[in-house]
Image (cartoon, rainbow, N blue to C red; front, top):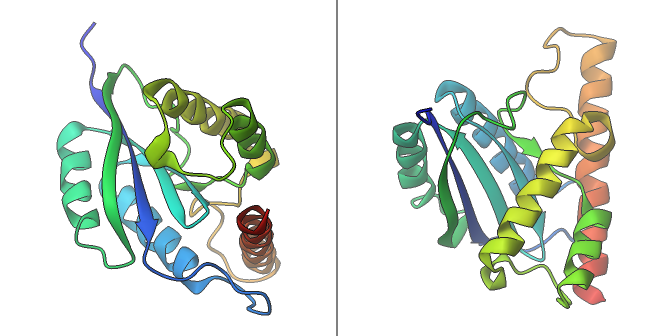
Length: 188
């Protein structure tokens, strides 16, 4: 069977300072998510993003040409630097099929993952290929258990009123909770 899709996983470091206590939301992370969702939808890509300890871990799935074009844009994005491809492989089907870009708030799972691998802080630059595959598996599990681990995505209803209010409040709460946990992990 011919593989039609590719999966690329990369790490990068944020150029902005992590969330500060007293701020209502990390605007930079929100802006990155908004851009990622828009670009991925436009380019028929799906994936997941995890942010911790000032580092991004992103998994993208789609046609290789579309991934390459997006990666070229990402290399020029001033909001992060030191991009490093952790894995690139063909896949028979996309495993994040319902997400343009899921922002994974799986901090409890990541802390357990880090403990298992004797890592004190989230640093995807030190991941082995097996660790990268394991974290992708956690992100895929979060996709399967959609309501448990992530904030709503761009596929939420775009009508005005109560549903949008709930959508944005959930986004804000999710990002704030992630930022607080990230601060806690950095200080731990």
